[in-house]
Image 1 (tube, rainbow, N blue to C red):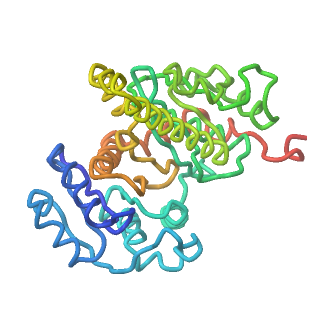
Image 2: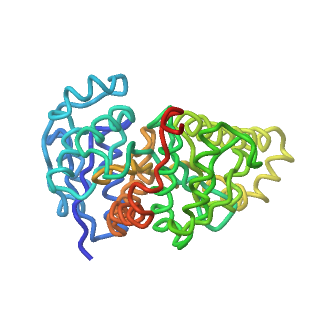
Length: 353
């Protein structure tokens, strides 16, 4: 099957062109139906493509030598959206020259440009950043928001749940994703009024939304494998994500130090190497790379800035799957199934009154 082209911001990320091109080439080798629009400095891209003739044959280059740096503020990035590799990759999605965009660049800039260029879908107030996290179960868990919106109201949380559920049906194949709100406890009385309002709305709309909603989950339980979508505001979500990533690195470093502490430990490492390699693979963020901005009129995927070629290839694969499964249309359909405006809650205390 032929998919729409994927626009790749070839200049983004810690190592820029080399890793982005290597990642796209690896994705192309795994899936020969992928086609690319490579956005960035043409000279550098052509030089990188010399090692990847298969990618070169399936790609077009859109030249620009202007790059958004990691230090640029979103407001600065917006002013240069029409000239930078990131901005032009997203503009290609709007123009129909590409079906989706991938960038490993500045997250704040990517969010700002994507939102301004593509706008939010009807029925969605704010886009959210969603990513897959490893679990002890058969499927990864989708968590959102991971930093796009530091402050959210109940309406935003319900919208995030709808978007996350549509993504979960693609990622897990589960017809009724198990959805929970992140909270400080699982009891109904726990949390803020906003969380309890969102929980009440989701509980009432669960059948129309085709989700399994059972209230709250805590941060230490979200990776056990018994939930498919964890919903929270971007402030809490970003903290939780970094805590999970930091714990994974801590465990890996602790094991490495322990195995190097003595001859007996080194022998133990050799015996347990298959298990430690499996653990390393499971915790490697490159194997779960590719966060999605859900709720836009188009697909934009954020690759981790420090991702290696395998990580970039995974981000490209996530992008292609979202295109293939029409996730944007799925979200639109889910919004329609719950009666358009009828599920929306009031924003403020005055509106509640």
